[in-house]
Amino acid sequence: MTNAPLILTLDCDMYSNDPKSPLQMLCFLLDSKMSKYAYVQFPRRFHGINKNDIYGGENKRLFQINPIGMDGLAGTNYVGTGTFFRRRAFFGGPSSYVSAGKPELNPDHVVTQSIASCEYEDGTKWGYKMGFRYGSLVEDYFTGYQLNCEGWDSVFYHPDRAAFWGDIPNFLSTLMMCLLEVAFSKYSPIIFGTKSRGVLMGLAYSHFAFWGTWSIPITIYAFVPQLTLLNGVSPFPKVSDPWFFLYVFVFLGSYIQDCLDFVLMGSTFQRWWNDQRMWSIRGISSYLFGSIDFFLKSLGISSFGFVITSKVIDDEQNKHYEQGVFEFGVVSPLFVPLTTTSIINFITFSVGVTRLILGHTKLDEIFIQLMILGFGIVNCLPIYEAIILRNDKGKMPSKIIVVSCLLAFTLVLLSYYLTSNV
Image: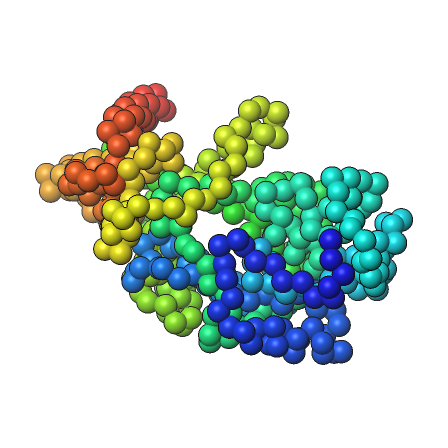
């Protein structure tokens, strides 16, 4: 569509904040020693984030922390915006000049007439071997990944001044995402990516591709420790068991490392806390629904469909966001598992503490379960507030509360039946 040697891609809601960014990009792409660089990726930055980023919308790990690590390998992934491409990279690997049978597609061709049409790519390799890669909702991830696999490198450049600014979604109702289309394709990073660019790059891209599968362990931790405690069963080691110390070490070590990553990248503890909370929320909502959507689609069954993230908010929503108050308000299926797990957490934690006070159980036996439940309750505080204390438009809808209560009651009865018959 263009004969420009360099191409900038931006989301429609992003704009340039630094006129020097093209010059900064040229330092990389015009350096003869960097002829294998396909693109320069600037970090995705957002304005309008409230003080503590309650929705984790900054996505610091995805847009700033992880790219630095990948930069030490073959280069960072493409995040869909704030990226300068070498046009040549869309026409095959660094050592090839694939034209797909059309002179117009040669990287050195000068456009002299209009070539835009509905059949432009028909009969060519455009979309699956050349250009931006189609066939996936995550075309940005897939395109960058494919370019890396073809032998191109990339670079992540993070200047102090934001090169581009974008709007940030500041409510919870649209969090659907799924990368499993790539993970379970013939281009799976764990196999194809590892073979093309080595184990470390393969694992780096696999980390993103298999994001949806986080829904499995997060959902298990959201329900199993709670329901087993309610039925007097403990799947975790006792405090007196040597395995207890390993479990605590892994739990605390992973969270401390994650917190340090955020703080060392110029963030705050409170922003990190909200980010890990949103990771848990996504695990039992968008990751879970996205994974179900993918597998239903793979089986040829009708799925949920794709929803574009809305950026439109009213004055009350904006006020709540600035105050750090979570916005629920709409009847969304994403809120059902959140509300259900918050109800079960509160009930089972109360039952566990009561049994402990009455001497019906020992702290040594249920310490880990109480620790997990207590951690869950603290993370669920905005949900409890939305269920009980709020009367504004951002409160949890009554329909969601009723459905979640019925679902929680059903899970409790089911767990009791299964436990009593084991």
